[in-house]
Length: 113
Length: 111
Image (cartoon, rainbow over all chains, first blue to last red; front, side, top):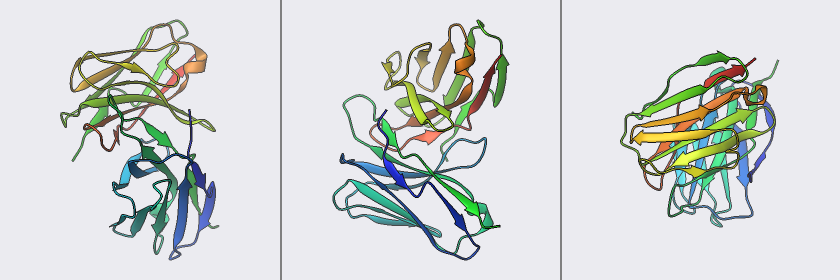
C-alpha cells in the first residue's frame, strides 16, 4: 500500500541532543499520528494531531500538523537513551467505513557509540 | 487507558495448520484492524472491521480471514498456514474516525 515519505530513515543520537524527523505526502490527511515501537513490541501512540497548523507537546516530544495537511514533524528535545527505537508517522483520511492509516517507513533512532 | 490485548506473544505452527489469532479491546471501539509487519515492508493492513459482523479487505487479505462476532473481539484466521505467513501480527482498535491503538503483537513462526 501507499507509504508516506518519512526521513531520515535512521539517525544516531547523543544524550542531550535534540532530534527531528518528518513525514511528507502528496495527499492531504485529516489526522497525523506519531508512534514509537520498541523491538518485539507493538507501536505506542506518542502524539495525535487533528488540525492543520496544530502544535502539540507530550513531555520532551513536540509535533506539528503542517498547514498544507500534507506533512508533519516530530521533535525530541534533550534525548535520553530510552528514546532509542523506531518512530512511525501515520496519516488518517476519514472514510465512511473505517479509517485506514497510511504509514511512513519509520525512523530508526540509535545511540552514538 | 486504552487496552488492546492479543492472545499470544509468540506462536509456532506447522505448515497447513489452521491458526487463530485473537485480539480484544476494552474501550468499546467501533473499528478494529489486523496488520502484519515485516522488515523492509513496514506495516501492511490485512483486514479491518468497522462494526460487529462487518469486515473489509485491506491491502493483503489473501490467505487470511477474520471474524467479529462481538464488538470487543476481532479474530484473524489463517486457514492453512504457510511459511510466508511467518511475521509479526499487530491488532489495533480505534473509536469512530480517530486514532488507532495497537496491541503488543504476536510473533508467528510457521515451520
